[in-house]
Amino acid sequence: MPGNSQRKGAIRKSSKRPTAGSGGRVRRGLEGRGPTPKAADRPNHKAHKLRAKSERDAARRPRKRPTDGDEWIAGRNSVVEALRAGVPVSGLYVAEGAERDARLREAFKIAADAGISLLEVTKGELDRRTDGAVHQGLAARVPAYEYAHPRDLLDAAAERHEAPLIVALDSVTDPRNLGAVVRSAAAFGAHGVVVPARRSAGVTAGAWKASAGALARLPVARATNLTRALQSYRDAGVFVAGLDGSGEAEIRDLDLATSPLVLVTGSEGRGLSRIVAQSCDVLVRIPIAGATESLNAGIATSIALYEVATIRSQIG
Image 1 (cartoon, rainbow, N blue to C red):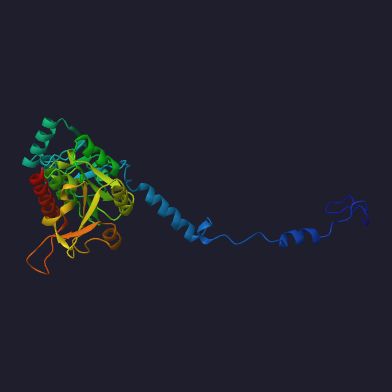
Image 2 (tube, rainbow, N blue to C red; image 1 turned 60 degrees about the vertical axis):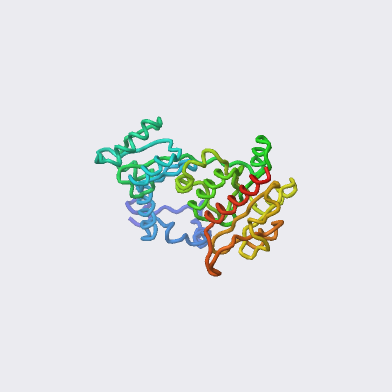
């Protein structure tokens, strides 16, 4: 009946609690929620799904293992040549199931005679260690070279009671040239070789092979700044002679050959850089027949060292 609030569906109103207005709720709903997230950050967006897939794929790829500066020689011929040349190999790695041929047997024999550890690993493991190089089932690990300090070369000369003879290389980037220079320096009585830390060849497996083992007998120093290293030598009473085609004297006539001496060689293409040339006490040249001919750093340094050694032997 009318007015009966107890019937089903009736709404009982109370004057004590009036219905709240909607203004507060609407106002909160209209408040800003910050900048719109990028597409890649929205879980349901295609860009987010593509990024997630890319990250999963990257996680599945083989990772290159840290080697603390160690170098890897990959390939049967390269490994055998390195072992023959006396490169300081710290470990020989062979892939499981690799075909045994003459090169592999020779590598095993040299390693056994030299006491080099031999490890058999999976092909996948060898792929990772050599960073995907073509290893033919054989690789060798070469530890990082420990460079001397430029000052150590003066100390080596003092221990032998000899006038220092040091070779410095300016922008020589071929490791084989560095190895050849070290080989010549050892043959002609030098006390060491200095290379810059940047834009220069370092002691790699290629340098070891070219040196024919001389790197085990002659130190190589690394200078943070070659110009400052040369100035330090000058301050210590060592003369600096630079090899340059425009030199005012021939290397065979170098009066300073019997004095404490640093011989600086530049790259084949550019020669000495301007700032290094200005750091030299004298520039000397090697006489060659053709005006357009040039000598690479290894050959030029060998000739110069021979001339210096000849002059020293005549005086001594």
